[in-house]
Amino acid sequence: MRLHHHRKKKGFTLVEVVISLLVLTIGIVGVIALLPVCLRAGKQATDMTQAAFFAQDKLEELKRDGYDALPSVPEEGSCSNSVFSYKVEVGGVIDPPGNLKEVKVTISWGEGNKNYEKDFTTLITKY
Image (cartoon, rainbow, N blue to C red; front, side):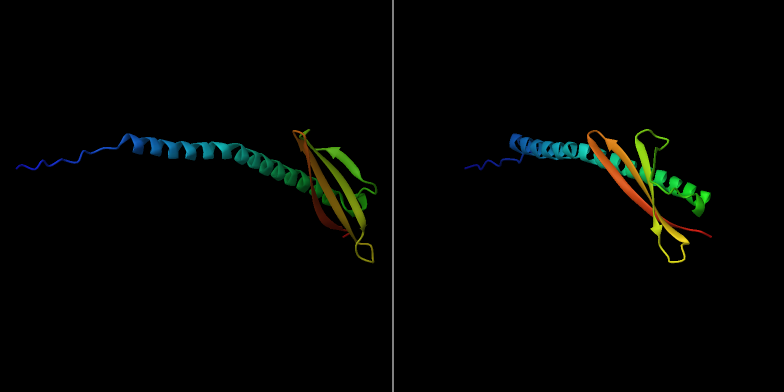
């Protein structure tokens, strides 16, 4: 009696191919679903960085003009980019001799139907 030896065939079965395609598809759909979230986070980071630059420019301008030129009432305006606007508020005198004031610059901007605001504060001395 002769025994028949079956040789193993190399390759993948149809079930293995279908399962691997299913796993691959789920992974790709997951990555695609994250794309809008990443883009939105990138846009928010860009806007926050621009707001910080505008605030820094305004604070440096106020420091350059000096203690005596600080506005006595809140001052508002738009930044070089029409999307961003600023508001400058000078707080009361911090130290008793009256040589130090707190200055707050608020940068505001809108994106779609949302509005954002970020405050930046510094101290300006008389000398």
